[in-house]
Image (cartoon, rainbow, N blue to C red):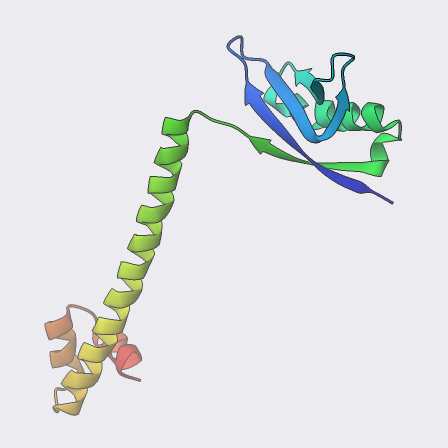
Amino acid sequence: MTRTLTAHAHMDPDGSWTVEIPELTSSSPSGATIVATGSATTFRGIRRAASDLASAWLDVEPDQVAVEITVAAPDEIVELVRASDKAEEEGNAARARGAQLRREAAHALREQGYPLEAAAAVIGVSYQRVQQLAS
């Protein structure tokens, strides 16, 4: 049976990576909690380092653990990504709304008797596109 764990990775000032698996802990002699921690010299090495860390900590073969990796970044960059996602979502919604309005315009023009070519000139598309929109 494979156990799935989550590893958190963050880049250190020297460009290497620290990998922690918060699900794997032990107590130090002083009673402090020790979290399973390892390192990787490159980003590509994170998955292997996390897998090796988990298998050694659990004393199992590497194929008995699956590790999902999350990568930390500075807060300002995370905010940029969130803002980007939100803007993209808003853009997609605006495009969908624009397409709906264009279909409504095509239907309305055709219902009022506009020929395809005239409706196309009003909307700014080809008459074939008006035919598609109005169908």
